[in-house]
Amino acid sequence: MRILDIESKIKDIEHDQDFLRLRGQIKILETARRGPSILLVSDPDKMSSVIELRRNSASVEEYLVKYRLMAQGKLAQVEQLKAEIHKLKADMHTV
Image (cartoon, rainbow, N blue to C red):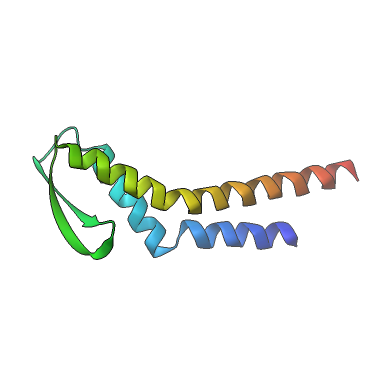
């Protein structure tokens, strides 16, 4: 039962609207090498506002770093929960 609870927590984190928005913004900035010269992304400091960035500007990398740092906490939490599942499964097989 503990494994199911942990899997549910992982699913909740991965499907959280804020986390999905962060991942979407990261994807937009990572794939900014082609396509339109102006990118529309949410401001990391105020997610409700939209900013325009030039595709090849230094600001793209700056915002990408900000978004990655914002998502890092959630990703670390997911990895920790996955490690806990792995440990529980290993304990089940040794019993």
